[in-house]
Length: 240
Length: 305
Image 1 (cartoon, helix red, strand yellow):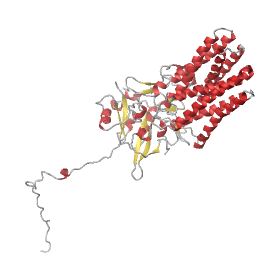
Image 2 (image 1 turned 30 degrees about the vertical axis):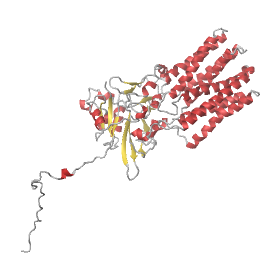
Image 3 (image 1 turned 30 degrees about the horizontal axis):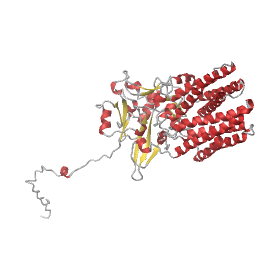
Image 4 (image 1 turned 60 degrees about the horizontal axis):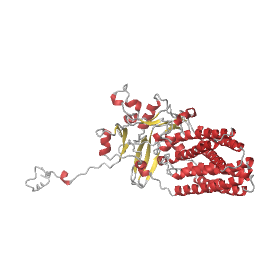
């Protein structure tokens, strides 16, 4: 079984919002119609986005770390938003595990957004339907695009490579390896939703240096473990 | 959660309608000496209230013209089950009224089926809220019990007011039943309030972003002008307002009606006021029910930035 998902590397995310803008650009230009923007150039601009980058500060000054945190639909393996939908507009695809909304069936009751603990579904105030991340389902299988571009637009946009796209059920995929090798974790595990998207934790980049790495055991000046006697400093006698 | 007035009106109106039906059917089972018109006009009142509730529910939808689709997923969705149960209950009440109109002997049987439908509707309405596991304030059997008790209490108060005009000999017994049910509803609602006051959220900032540090502060939520998430899941009222609405609904929905029902046994004109006060109180109660529920997604929307 395939479960497509994103693995987000919090260690390299710089909070540039490229994924947000590229997501908006792609999804507002699609067949499903534009994602609404209300008062875009006015007071209190608001609109529908499938992806948001938030910023958190961990710790107390001066020991603080700034953490940029991209948040989009986690394509849960046990999605709470799907069984509550009264019309069946909200569904999880069997073939690749993507959670989608059928905009033609959605009645706009917002019940799915109540059931989702992550707040990743956004009601489109113009189309009057619930919208959410589609994992760019209209890109990843699109044969009109070059093969390298058949990835979610957020993944393509990310300048630091903080977003890994792949099948998390395939242990050989880059996404699965990143999760297992770098301690990828799900959000709100206590909710029992089993999110497919995982996050890679931040870690301190360090380079441990042991003394034997500084001490050259093959020093040609060293004979039979006897330290070479340092030569007296050479100097030139300018007085003569 | 942001209280949606369409849903507040839906749940309070149909609750009173279901309660009134249960009282009418109990009256029939007790072989009270009342005219058939008592049941027919009573059923009309029930249909009016539940019809208004149904109408209100349409205002909650982005696409009301697709509302018929909501009956599709009854296998998994309590909302879908409610969507089926409400018209079924209304059809049952209509059948009950027709049977009384024709003087048919089938009234008891139709009433029995409609009673099952009324209780089913109570369970469905309660489960719409109780089934959302992430909203700890709602995910409790008390939610269903209270929808049932509050619906029956307001229905019985309405029955006592209705009997003043149609069957005055029944007002005293109805008022006593309404007092008992209102008291039971007060106990149930107080239990829920106490339970919710002691709730410890299972989801924390730490599990929301997956960082185990006691101090995490949001610096930006990714949008300056607000979003669906900042509108739908916050009630937007001050702490003082929330603190004042709790005693207000307890007085209006429970204590004042109890007193008026008690006096109403001897002074029946007060019974209509008792119902109106209780209904206004229940609107406030339902508003608080929504406002009290703290959605875990709010952890991601603490600071605009």
